[in-house]
Image (cartoon, rainbow, N blue to C red):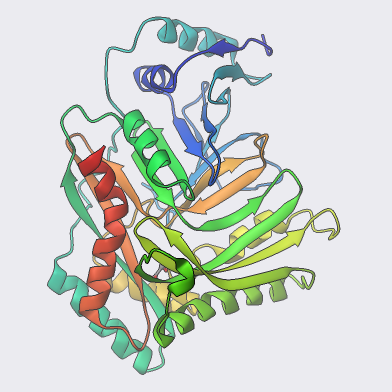
Length: 389
Ligand SMILES: C=C(O[C@H]1C=CC=C(C(=O)O)[C@@H]1O)C(=O)O
């Protein structure tokens, strides 16, 4: 049974997963054409602290903060779609596999997605509320309670009529070739889509570990070589860099390469990025992925510095639940390795609306109106998909 492969389209597979109450993840890695997907067939999903190296093939979907409602979710790859063929894992449960194939034979009659059982805590912030929180953050930074904090918000946008998550995924993949593009749908948890520019932890087929310090935002110019950065953004990104270096130091890891910062484009925006890499063929550090994941999340690109006071400030002043926004997600132990990305430039699908999320790094030099504008621009990454697809 383990070698049964079948040709299907992504629409058919996604439709069957929804109809069969299965958790499904669809993704496209940056600068790749290959759309991949996996589904868990036995139980709906498993939860727990991610262990990269020890995990079977599957997809992690983890929140900003674990709570009773928002757990670290692992979708085990009982079935894998490589863009053309669907293939079961050797240990996929036979009965559920046959049930899934039966669902695939009948064209799915619904154009739906899994919705969250927990929508009542999606409070929305006004422009005034957000700007007041930024002012308070600047005061706390001036009082040396912290160096940086990332404040975020969410906003509802109507879904176009006959919205199709698969068509929107394909539109994201076309519009954002350099992003990690994802569509995750889990029974009772909900459906999230996004185009993230930020690697959290990645280990590729060549055993190369990769993480980035990403921060600083401005609207994109034609040629990135023409980008001019203010001192505020340069310092903001340098803080993220310093944090990553402190993590390596904690692990006593000295053999890494550091390249950057350089300007990169992410949709309609540009950021500053420094790349950190470790060759795990040369450096013996079998748990580096999991160790760095634990130290990095939530990074100073989504939380702040120092981490603890920034986190407490967010919980006290942001005024809403981030849920899976600014958490992380991605495939682990796939044929192309493990690639976890920060869940940014994303939205959660409700029945008739999408909930869009975005944040901005606040430092001593922050201007509340500019930070609000920055979140508006970041929301455009998903907003554009909803209005144009
Ligand atoms: C928090 C977000 O972006 C982060 C990543 C890049 C630049 C950022 C900034 O300039 O503030 C943020 O730290 C978001 O997109 O919601």
